[in-house]
Length: 125
Image (cartoon, rainbow, N blue to C red; front, side, top):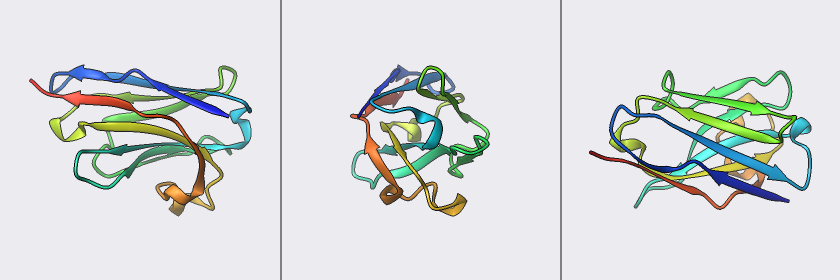
């Protein structure tokens, strides 16, 4: 199983980026997919998740209204569209796949079994 995250980079405040996470080794249809991030000196935190059933979406408070998660099961890929980026969004972003226990657990790392290598997002002028 491999998760390949890409799309990170340097962007000015207010700009946009789209992260991609390509999964190989199994199909995404029966798995939940999450994005997490870790800023320097901080713990890793949940950013967003999309469920295996009905593609329900969940977002952290700090990114609601700015980020959009989506999945393309046919391409075995999940995306994170990030708009109106702020300097505090600077972090390494990780995608992860698992089967979360329920909606309240979407941001719990232990519910995700496989992790990508991370992609750096830097928001700076």
